[in-house]
Length: 261
Image (cartoon, rainbow, N blue to C red; front, top):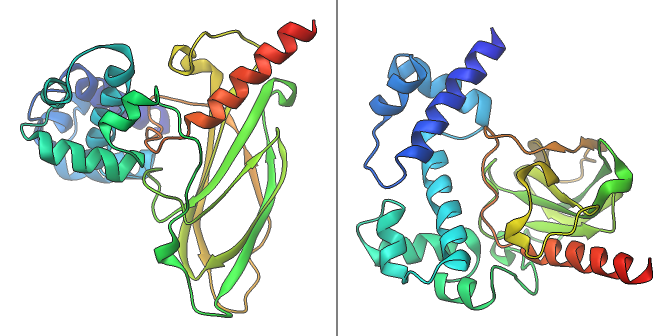
């Protein structure tokens, strides 16, 4: 039954991608999945962790990221291609989700020099805890740098509340995590290939993992978390924030290994 449900969600996601510039409704998506719109919304959220509308918005911004670095289209044209009638609305949503404006994202070729955290979500003194655990992968020798971040919901966008970059699979520790309900996102990139650009990476080389909600309360320890990275699937929410500095580190690592060989 789960396979049937996942295939239904996949059909809806294909419809989103194939009609990215169109004003899709929940009825359109449910029709592609062959469910009533009420049942479709429930199963879609259960499978992906987010609503169909948010997933569609994430796909549109993900495509915009690709167009910004792979074409010379101006921002207004790109916004239309990904379903936005207002370039202002597109730019503000892109900036909020990715962490930099569309023009900055293009200027830096999709790479961010740092990963800022959301300092506005801090807690008063004594109301923080530590989230720690271990990250493993299907083939640890192939994993490059690993990003670990905590977000307020299952969609990895905007600034994480806390994050870290690991040099491969292994233990992680996120300190001074404020009280609240958080979702842990882990992402890595295979480093045994030789892509010429971060955006040329094969989707099969991207590994992701998620866990949550993680409840952080005052004076209560958070149990250690075991995270297992798996190849990214079409039903995994797109990673929107500019994490491509990690990919650049991975690409540099490939170059270093090639020179040393």
